[in-house]
Image (cartoon, rainbow, N blue to C red; front, side, top):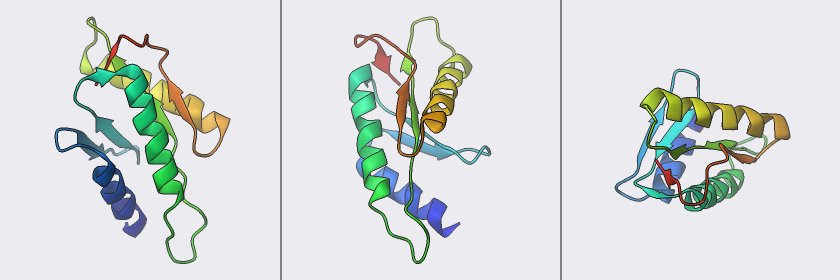
Length: 112
């Protein structure tokens, strides 16, 4: 619980006041940003991974964060948007520690 709280607070400190963060039963954090271009979302995810990797918690090994980034599409429903983010996260986890994967949206797509 201490690590989850620390990671959550650290992520929150890197976001804007208008962005949202949540912790899911699947032991993952979900971050919803105010509309931004997809490339900006990827940049936020990379910054979060770097910030988390710099945290030190007692005798624990280095913390890592993998991120899946998904952008809102006009035909989206919340479930489809989150499903693409989860698929991107699964690809990031397969690549290794501290990776960011995207749903392949166009730069003009809005990140949500």
